Length: 362
Image (cartoon, rainbow, N blue to C red; front, side, top):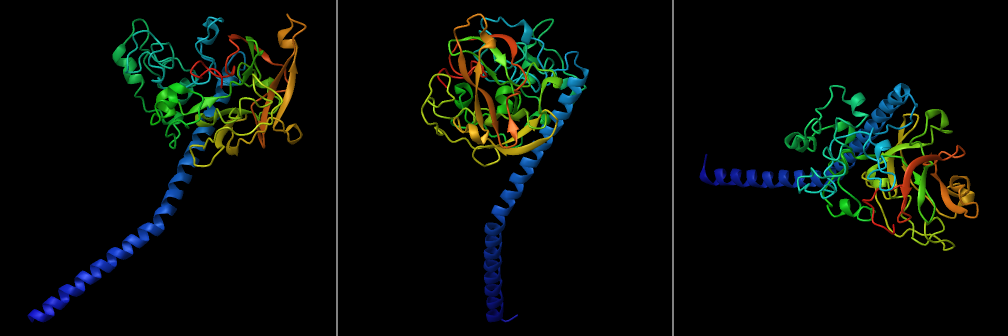
């Protein structure tokens, strides 16, 4: 080939390459957002499938349970000191060993062995009741007869996809759990042992005292009036959404009479603010917006419930509380069925449905 033709061919090849590269870059820019949407939709669908699987396993648990409990109850629940309960059952129903609250047990250290959600505290994967149904091969008990630190560490590293939402990327900045929010890159799955939280909605008096369950927790299936609407599980990031109104709203534990408003903004793991994946007592799952207004009684979002019978020992005290927590197509409460005594004592600080990972005053 003549030199000038060879040079021209090389130039044409370079121009062609640049053109192709430009096309590829353009297509990447055009297709990239679509791929992101597809990946997001896939994660959301997988999360819902896992909530459905948890719901199916929960139905099997209830059918076999002598008390027909709507939600799995950890065997240590009844053994807690009523004056200082260390947990109320929101996470210990299934999953691996969590590494949150590493200082919960003396000498726990930074490896998570001292976590309140972990093996050393008695909440390892071998003890979480739903694991027997979703992972029937079983788990080694690394707590008894003697504590196995190596095994307990491995309990924190288990891969149990049934309990992990693929979009679980850590806490919202507005969550009422300082232990979790102080580790913004830590997933709920790693912190608590599961991406999902069970509906253990409870209430108590403004001055503290006995806590009553107004949710499926500790309640037989036959006493859940509307299983199709009643929430059993939700992605953990949504646990605080209904309570994220201003502290002085009419639904607050410490104030009344002020028009409520959102004091925070909590997005779901699937990208939309105030919208979360839920699983229900009847076993189905969906994605719902948790729109709640503390004074919108006419709209059916939050109704107020005057409780006297829970505190019959003091006839002069009447506690005006948020006994009904519900929205469009979902509810946390089980009214009109009677509240169930939990045997737990609430200090009067914070909200009674939350563990002591929750900072007082929320």
